[in-house]
Image (tube, rainbow, N blue to C red; front, side, top):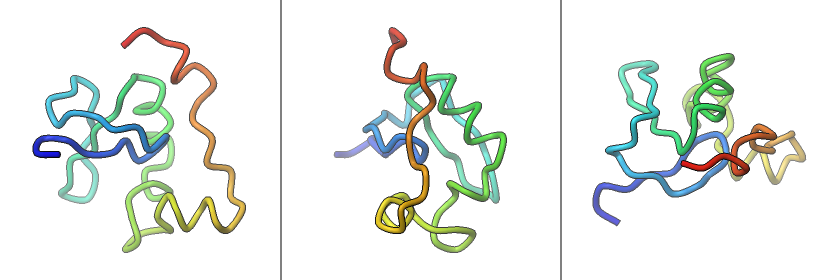
Length: 77
């Protein structure tokens, strides 16, 4: 899985060469589509990991709304 990571919004596998990325707290986050990047940028602390907030799996287990933006996977990437 070299060069791959997960989109923090929808948990899709994404390349570290994705054109959709955002830098927050000295870390670069990669996204599979512009809708996920926009969702992240609205409230990055929600998606930025255990140090700032719950991880994706913790949010899922806790019943938080972890759905990807409606247009996320309907888009052609």
